[in-house]
Length: 298
Image 1 (cartoon, rainbow, N blue to C red):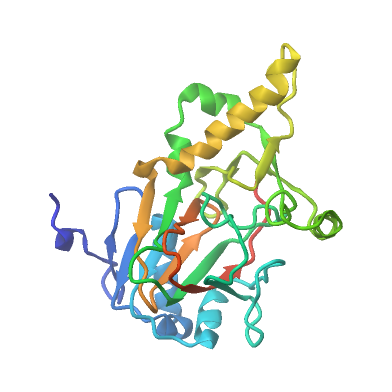
Image 2: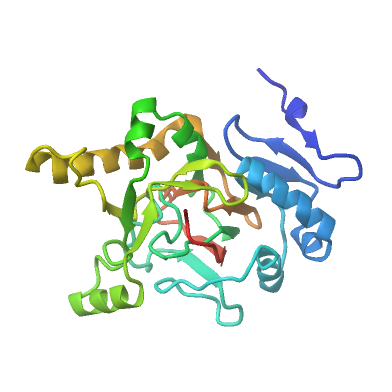
């Protein structure tokens, strides 16, 4: 077994960031870093961002920061965005409150593998999530390296999905329990987005499997190459999409994080998916998330 101390890394000379990789595939915990300092110090932010691109999700403990500092740190990556269904803190636009208790509405979007807001034409670049209150047991979150998921696909599957595109919908997910007229209004505000099944990371150049629970169907599957008879079309495309979505559930691509008050996760939403495990009822779980605007996948 590898000694944890052997995995503690130091950045180049002069760096203040130490970190411990949590798996061989994804995730690292930063040691001795205060996010309030990263807001003010450019060199620290540059190092942290480089680690984020490498490990895809970073974790920190004991971040007793204010909401203003939380927002200020997230804004170092870019402008923040609100969520059309979840509430934001009224004094800090873009800081979404994910508060779960016995009075919470029945929502089923966190406890599924997903990439945030791919129903947007430009999904978020990343997110900064801070734990405000957590149960004594349960409520972990899992992150998945979707670049690894793509790289480990069989060669014939990678060939088959090259050039395919998928439709992503807020109406079919967050809108599913709304009355029909309300659901239609939601879709008018946020029409279905179309994204490549395999996107290219704009900073690292990695190929990423980019379908998740918001994807409803493959939009350009019905071609002469793929469809001989009608049964090949809807079932064939659906089976392929479901197979691709299921790759996020492979444990070898994952890291699982146990929350504590004032712990923080920072993730690259372009190259990961995540799953918030809802195994803690009737305990309360309160999280606050700053989502960072992204670009159009290609």
